[in-house]
Amino acid sequence: MALNQAQSGKGKERHACDNPFEEQIIMIIERLDVGYQLGQAIKKIAESKRLDTNHAINELLGAINYIAAKIIHLKEGE
Image (cartoon, rainbow, N blue to C red; front, side):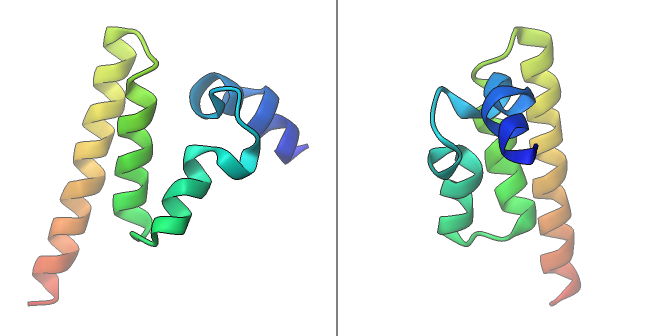
């Protein structure tokens, strides 16, 4: 069911670009080993390119928030 959702449901709309799961942005980011916060930011940036203006702005704001969380976490480690 999850694979179907990723390849046919919301995943197809937002992430798949007609690619199989193994070639979708979620797997590309995982292979980069950038960590959760930065990975989510990258995913949202990529998704924004396929959305109308208002939805794209919301995704990009979400990316900013994930990046801010990463910055806060880095500052906590100083």
